[in-house]
Image 1 (tube, rainbow over the protein chains, first blue to last red):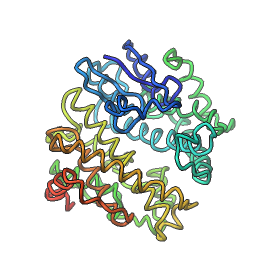
Image 2 (image 1 turned 90 degrees about the vertical axis):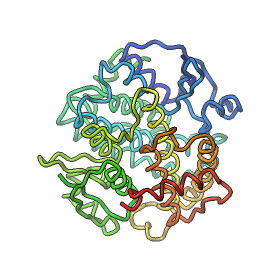
Image 3 (image 1 turned 120 degrees about the vertical axis):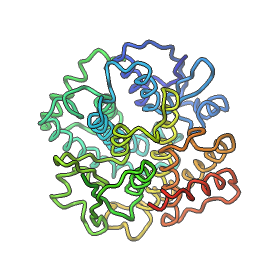
Length: 203
Length: 203
């Protein structure tokens, strides 16, 4: 079993943090997405959607999509639970993970992909107006997170979850996307300091 | 317990189909998203991200995000399983549901939101170039789906799942988004005819 990834990209980091929290060690194989590594016939056979990471099982079965890989390991090794336990907790984790994924991380990624010169060959066409439109969206989501984190320790409640992993990775990805975290969001800052200090954050 | 939704929007339809497949009946309350219904203080208190649908439990707890609502009911009533059973099946459903959601439905929705005149007041700014960039992405995903559906009955394998629901809703949403399904994709057409004929598709 191995994971094919690009170490610097945000989605592979989500999987590495998830696995570190579970205490699961795996082999990693690097592919260079900045140099066309996702467009080769070999990689496209693993994942026709041409994205990293991909989990490759010993029989060759390929599982793509960050959250699908994480859920595979949650099923194999339920503890510590990172997707919640019980109907309501599961629903809350799913809700916040999607808000962080389709909302925050997607907005930050669109700003990066459509504005950063390094992405000109990979994001065709780069639409600068769309990149700019995503910056205020990311900031609005940070504001909502701050309100939520005034009431509870982690995004989905009292328990650390995959939603916190997605949010941490998205916020760290704001640096290359050139979006600044507003320092007045103090509850967000308290949460960030805590999750960024976990040993898994270095994964 | 009730669901607050806008009947004509694609994400509420995903939840209605999911509930119909489970045989679960619920009360629905309509909010008119085209007339600012998501931006009122009352609705924003339910979901600060201002999106439908929202599930409201009897104690007032609000669960937003389509897939979070579906997962809540999957946990409460596991049969028929629509998120897969067992680690590998769960991972495959998650992978395909995300490809259909973040890939196909998102591309179709971006084309609709950034090009349709009716969305000018809700999608600010409308970026036409970004809307156009999403049309070939949607078509490329349909092509990949056709290849997959040449090999298996449903998107995630032998069993109908939430991935098929998301894909059906996305394809039907191509009509207002003015994207045509290429008729030569015959395996996709075979699958579409089958899932669109299920009684749940009318929900």
